[in-house]
Every structure is written in structure tokens, then in C-alpha cells.
Image (cartoon, rainbow, N blue to C red; front, side, top):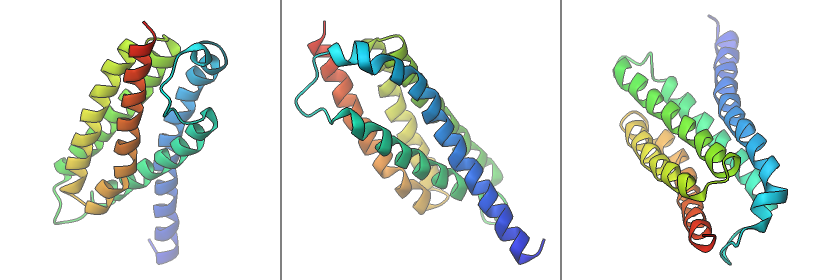
Length: 168
């Protein structure tokens, strides 16, 4: 493969990783958009709840960072100094946290269950932390790209908790 086609291949793989993560966000938005005008707008929320318009751009940016982080890890699959099973395990953990991410949206907004949402989002935090740990052992940059994500999910957990507590 020449340099130009190699670069195009890498860009295509990067785009696929980012688009896969954005697709998870799109799937989640199906549940969210149905619940925001009705159910979610009627909930009592804590005073620190961001405006509704802020969530979409934040998530788009976070999914893009997640895709880049996963791409960085995938790019190490052919490195002689990195065991392929470590790359595979890291990407499997990444996939698990993506599934939990989508599941939270389906449970919280789709099932309209702040309690079950809280349980899923706590599992999500654990999965993100484990993903970051695995990523860090392969490439520190990939781990650092997930820092805004785990911070936002911790904040979302706090919101989820308060929504659960304020809406018996």
C-alpha cells in the first residue's frame, strides 16, 4: 500500500469508528426525542440541570472523542510491542460501555425509569473506568480522550440521582 492509499485507509477507519459511536448517540436520540417534550419536561429537576439544548452538542462531541480514542487503540493492533489480545480486550470493554450507554438512554427515557437508569449509569461509569484503564495500558492519549466523557457521565449520574429522588 502506498503512502496516499495508506493515509486514506486510516482516515476511512477513523471515520468508521467515529460514525459507529455517533450511531449509538443517534439510536439513543430516538428514545430521548420522544420523551423530552412530554415526560421529561414534567419532571422535577435539580437547579443545576443544564438547558435541554446543551445535551445534543455535548454528546456529539463526546461520541466523536470516543470514536477517535477507539481508533487510536485499534491502530495498535499491528504494533509488534503490543499484544493483540490486549487491544482486543480494550476494544471489547469499549464496546460494552457503548452498549451500556445506549441502554441507559433506552431505560431512562424509553422506559421512563430514573431508578433503573441510575442502576445502568452506575454500571456505565464502571465500564468507562475499566475502558480507560485498558486504553491507558496501550496508549495514554486514548485514555485522556475519554476523560471528558467520564466527567460528563458522572455529572449525568448526579442528575439522574436527583431526578429519581425528586420524583417519587
